[in-house]
Image (cartoon, rainbow, N blue to C red):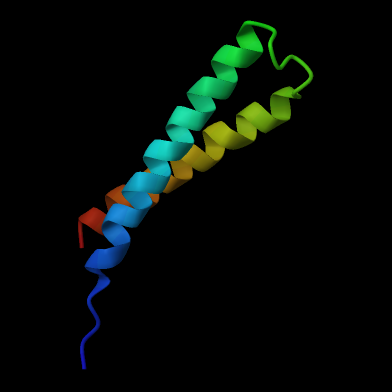
Length: 63
C-alpha cells in the first residue's frame, strides 16, 4: 500500500506563507514602536522559522 504524500506539500507552503506574513507584521509593528516591548530574539526566531519552513516546502515540492 503506497502513501500519498502530496497532502504535506500545500501544508508547508501555507505555513511558510503565514509565518512570513506574521514576521513582516511583527517587524513593521516593532519598527513603528507599537510592540516595542518584544525582544529582537523573537523577531530573529520568526525569521529563522520562516526560512526553515520555506526550505522544507521547496524540498518537498521537488519529490
